[in-house]
Length: 206
Image (tube, rainbow, N blue to C red; front, side, top):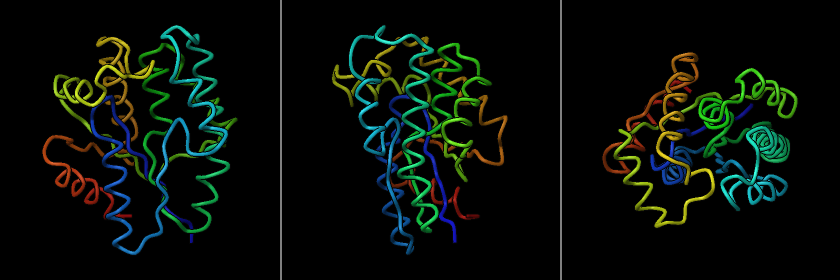
């Protein structure tokens, strides 16, 4: 029986990395085999591309080159980690997937959403999560959390200006309204344990 593919999405500071670990642990207590992963990364080839994407100066890559690198990393991630796990019946919980490219390189970066989807079709055969959990926070709270977390160590994408991240948030909201069957909006305010319960509730039908 095929496993389930769950993606956690959202802007900087919403708590995705914390919640991926917590959600995976909660699913394991319910008897599921769970693979935790992330983007960019999640496979040997994709982790090598991650360094290229997140390190260096803000202008290291053009928007088009950045989109291609993300698509290449995702293709390896899907082929080497995600599809094999799903075929083995495991649940895969990932910190970011395609919708991050659509929001960051698309909505905020100006690359056509259609072109990004085409890259995903070529590289990853159009694979989409069974459920995308979009963590949401007021912009001021997200910025406060991101600053407290990074302590000046933001990567080259996370460290972009506030206007860029506002466009990212708006793009995520639009994506969620366009695919309501796949997306669930999750309030990320409150204690981490409460947010995890909200995530679990959004998966009950799966």
